[in-house]
Length: 391
Ligand SMILES: *Cc1c(COP(=O)(O)O)cnc(C)c1O
Image (cartoon, rainbow, N blue to C red):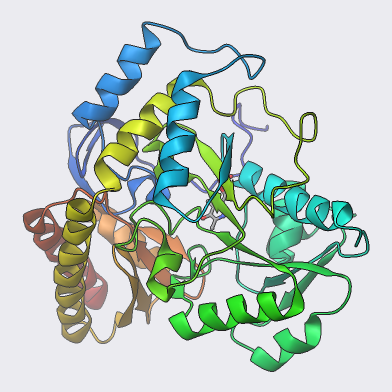
């Protein structure tokens, strides 16, 4: 008999009932260190007082009006994102996959209005993840996500990650945009080298196409910059955001330059809930904290500490781990044993991690995690690795 919840997930037998900062409390009272943060969502940890205050204050005033009207909190958040980034304009969504939908629509409309309606193709990369909508799975293109769901949205080309020649050859007169994650998340925490991101920007400029960055997972302070592309010193034309921007409240956004967004006038796109007062009030509170040089400097400092501890962990358990990779507090441990076994062993030692492709476990702690908590988390991972060695 089919379960009352559609069985699309492989869930761990854990029920968390409360969260405090970097800690998750199980129904039975056990306290887990959370190195998953709801998959890079709870950027400020659980139950951050400023986020609780922003949400409850707004909840007592007004939840929803629709985009038929002005929404002051939405205006404020848009202004702040424009102020803090390359973008001239913002559309709010409720999730990453909705941001993907608009990013693709926007790129196509840009060229349609520019008198190049044949430019509809999006060049994307193997191992990428852009969400589970029809556009999102077509964009990622992996058989795992697309099989059985055809016919797929046409117009995507998939290239091996890091193959420059294939990339140059793939761009033609029908190409509208290149779509890429600056750090692949689901794909196994693979940062794109700065040089490659710069090269992609140059290539887009040369060929007159748009660069769409998917910063749904790597954005909002995760890598130690407000957005990951800042490390490479380049800017995209369109950027997808979600996850961390809402700190746990469903909120996403598409940020764009004026030129890229030029075709998106009244009636071209919409969302009932996108940019609702609750989400935007929380988003403003997230920006208050994350979008400051002091906060980002702390992320970088803690990231350095965590990376060093993880190198030690890998060295101590060469039969379990093969290396550390990632950027900022978006880290991955490549595993020698099945990554899902490492995640399970971590549950037994009360540390939550997230598996990813390429046999990696992801470590995406709340950006507010303390050094002491990082040290404790690595101690717990060490205990988990020891149990696997003696198993
Ligand atoms: C999670 C994720 C998405 C999809 O976001 P949802 O909110 O789950 O729809 C898209 N792109 C990347 C890089 C992601 O990590």
